[in-house]
Amino acid sequence: MEVGIVGKPNVGKSTFFRAMSLKDAEIADFPFTTIKPNIGVGYARTECSDISFGLECMPRNSFCIRGNRFVPVKLIDVAGLVPGAHEGRGLGNQFLDDLRRADVLIHVVDISGRTNEKGENTRGYDPANDIRFLEGEIDYWFHGILERNWSRITSRVKHSGRDLIDELTLQLAGLGITESHVTEALKKADLDSSKRWGNNDLMDFAVELRKTSKPLLVAGNKIDLDKGNYERLRNEYDIIPVCSEAELALRQAQASDAISYIPGDSRFRLRKDISDKQGKALEYIRENILGVYGSTGVQQCLNKAVFDLLGMIVVYPVENENKLTDKEGNILPDALLLPGESSAIDLAYRIHSEIGDGFIGAIDCKTKMKVGRDHKLKNGDVIKIITSR
Image (cartoon, rainbow, N blue to C red; front, side, top):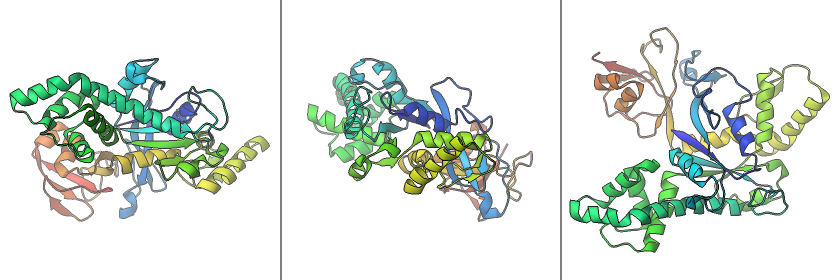
């Protein structure tokens, strides 16, 4: 699973990415932290299952702060967005290549309207233009791919007896599109796969395919400078108010032990004396960001993208169902993100293909019940896989 961070120049996308990926405020050596510069790692926050058992976890692939488990998520800082990207203009080809890898998109916009369509400083610009622009670029990209390949797709359906859904899934697999995406898009576009389509039908399908396969969340950055755009647009678009500079400042202060702060919280606590300048900056964040919006919005963006838009759940596999440990004795060592409809056998294969091949059953450590391969997992489940190997 990969989360794409998208936005035009000068909207604070780099600061947002740095704040979310902890690039300048490393906590520990976790997965993805040493990958090339445009790849990072964020951490989706969820309540740790150690609370349910009255234990203290010993994380291995993640970290935990006072009962809050932070699970690694791969981030892609998508190449610069310019008009005509779907036609290959500017960094268009790189932009679309990065985009195809993303499962969900966070679109960073300057909600204050102080950055125009070219990324230049201005006043009174409508950020809704940027939202519509990105959606349009992806729509035309999908439409162009469909249009170029439509004759071949329909020919194969006609002569091979393959279903249109199967053929579309095969042709679009390189974009990260699945059969369920195609099926849902057809349903929402109200198109009959057995009838002849016109160009308008292709565009309708492309639009719904974008919504289904690349769900998009808007990060309304620079909320501290906003003069009403957020309130005007919040009911029309899925927008979270964000101040990425405030989040980066808080995470850096936390890393230097100046404050006690959990990413996503509505408050922080001073831990040591700081300069007047630092104190004024933190007080500004407390009063104008946290006090007004309840958070800086950065952690909320990642959580909503992962848990709401993608419907992921967190599951904890263990080897000892009584002590909830791995073979080294670590309590709840790993927290894994899985699709919401995952079953016990899906978890087994996620751990290792050999464990999936040797699957016999599983134990739900919360209920102490033995469950089968088709048992549906829930967020926060602690599962012991039983294998023949």
